[in-house]
Length: 187
Image 1: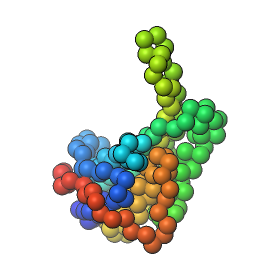
Image 2 (image 1 turned 60 degrees about the vertical axis):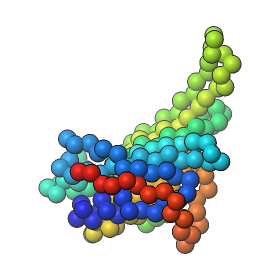
Image 3 (image 1 turned 45 degrees about the vertical axis):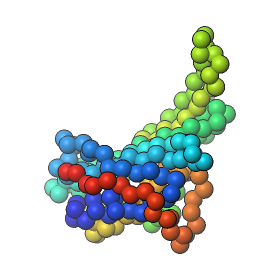
Image 4 (image 1 turned 180 degrees about the horizontal axis):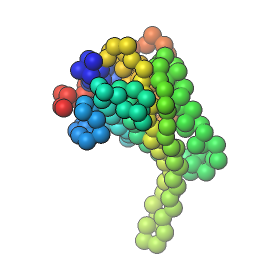
């Protein structure tokens, strides 16, 4: 089932704003793993990035409550006022839940953190603009009857990256034009 899930992950047709490539997957966490990284561009400028790792242990993992686990990292620049908003953490977590629900991705055991960071430059760097970013680190156990069902989770991850990066979601039924394709899968 992992080969089918990995093929679905690596064969996904991505939105044109995302540049996606396969990256080396962690080797010691699970017997099988696949990983991708994405940069999100808007008008020629990188506005966000992230990684998605798909882990699989055919014997199951008690900490996961299943045989698969999705692990993600998503980061994007935000307005400094947004980073200071005390509700940003809750909103950031809701982006993940909303993305999974929107795509009909069935899952259990979600966990993660949402972090907002702002930085102000001083001294010789005083002329640099203030910066702020939001970062979501999360994992969940996908409930899959077939490996191909991982696609709903991958689509949800794409939606999460777009939401974090400030891009509008594509309406249901709109298929992105396949401008970027991930690299070949490694094990």
